[in-house]
Length: 267
Image (cartoon, rainbow, N blue to C red; front, side, top):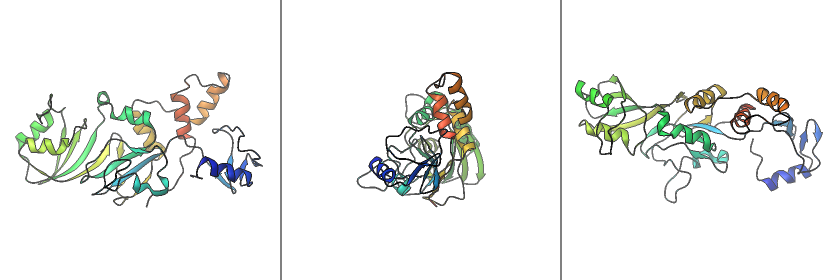
């Protein structure tokens, strides 16, 4: 739940609307343990989340940006959930649809997008005409699209005569379109259906979004090479180490991610 700005939250405390462990919070400056203290607003339990993670089914006509003077952005589609610092992980072209991850977790995003991680990105591609066997082989072996190096090997799955699944591990500018152009074809429609271990929730209509489940976040973190730590494990670690986790970065960070996985969606 997003209660508002820092000053608004302080006002709620002064109004007696916030409790900590069942007792009225008397001062906005009171220190709390986000992993163990039970905080409620107007009687409704609150959960601390250091970061947020949304899966969106990006629609056509919206740019993958945090702000734009001339265009609607994916962040603007979040409405009241567009908290400060949230951004799209990577980008989809304005005319590309499908799976887009939005978060304020810069560390996870950096690791997912790092070229050395080779995270799979799968697209459903509608093309102008049937791919010849030699074209499929060129796409899968890697080919020249005008960069210094050829593309990394890809995977092609033939669905219909003019529809394929194409899995790549890079994110070059207009890469899928340029790869198909390089074999004498043309992309008519492009939809991303998976990103690493995360699959698009097909129940999401274009423009809708929802928070990732705990299982989805664990899979995505595995793609980024991040070991998840439960909130209980982190508290035990703190007690064993005099109140401080042995790794003050990842252990605490991911325990906070898992401390609560609740929230609404943009349906």
